[in-house]
Length: 191
Image (cartoon, rainbow, N blue to C red; front, side, top):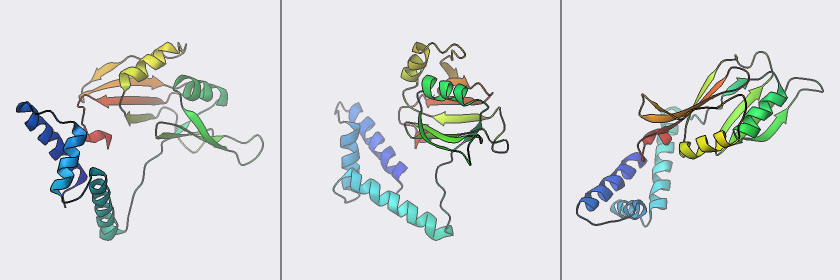
């Protein structure tokens, strides 16, 4: 069976081809037509079948299955970390952990599916790390950040050499988070 990306590319190609003939169909309608080409009733069913097949092929080949990576960033002040990650960037605290009273904090913050671990522990991470994040809606995100008037960071919205727009922020501990949106609307880098 063809891969999920192939099926999405087929739908995009179908839509463009029909558009050239002045036949307008939504991307969703084209996905449904491609699903029927694979002899299934809907795009959701096809997407599930492809995902299951890709997952079983990966597992059968090696028994290894990797999940999302979660960056760990070193922090030195809980107050400054909350001011930056929660108040400025709009993340929320998922959980906090300490081994005891007055021990270093280890916490997870998240926003829109992106998770970051912040740690006061000496051996967990080196200050000055950079996290690269693919995203959508970067212009809205940039406007949101600028409206907060955070006194320590006024990021720009810039064109990057990798065909994307970028907003890069630096936390109070020297770590950077580089938010990047591909210029292509249907880009595979956002899978």
